[in-house]
Image (tube, rainbow, N blue to C red; front, side, top):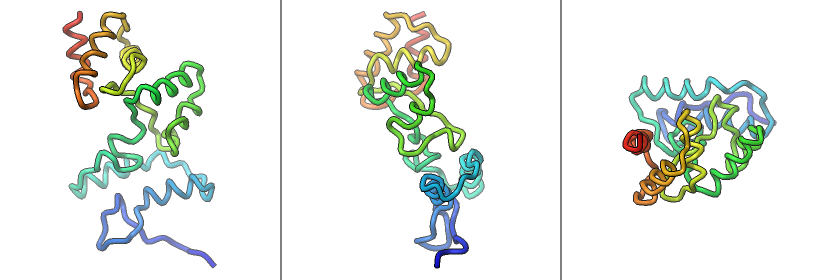
Amino acid sequence: AGADRIHGTALGIGERVGNASLDQTLMNLKLLGEIDNDLTNLVPWCELVSKACEVPIHRQYPLVGEDAFRTATGVHAAAVIKAIKKGDNDLADRIYSGVPANWFGKQQRIEIGFMSGESNVRFWLQSRGIEAKDELVKQVFAKAKATDHILSDEEVMQVVREFV
């Protein structure tokens, strides 16, 4: 009993409804321990399919969407940052993610938004080689708290430029 092959699609793009997305199928097979393949090329493959088919990837699509492996929530980010600072990248990759980002050549992303803590701001600045001076952190944090969205890199950099 069992299946010998899978008929699937890339990013769910197919001739009819119900075909399995190969990217998600491979992810789940790896999570179940059924395969041990290197899946680091899966993300570039999905991006290539998206471009070739002119079908944008939804921001919340698993693995490759903009929101995959991204957090701006203070408590979540603080736990990820703590694990990174301890040098435990495996833990950082699994604290709030059911799927390890490094399996797919990605990493956890800490962003800044209205639900962030100051640790998000400090980490974001330091990870880009910007000194996290207290006053700068407070200004970026205030900007984040005054919005209803995750700040873009450009929005944060504008505050940095105004500070300097």
